Amino acid sequence: MDIGMIRGLGTVVVLVAFIGLALWVFSPKRKNDFDEATRLPFADDDQARERKAQDSSRSDQS
Image (cartoon, rainbow, N blue to C red; front, side):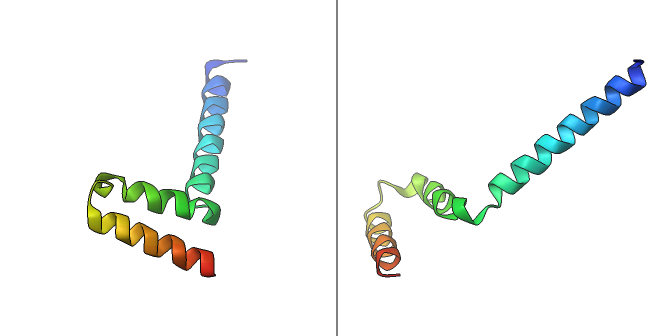
């Protein structure tokens, strides 16, 4: 096994990891978690709390 083969295998491992991460990030199951994370900086804001309550009530009704 020479250095070219090792580099090629390393490239394949990184490519597989990248594809797996991309699938995990763009999974529809994770959308709610990421939407909640985007609102974290505003968690102390009263309007954000109200918006979160409205969003959760809408999702409960669906």
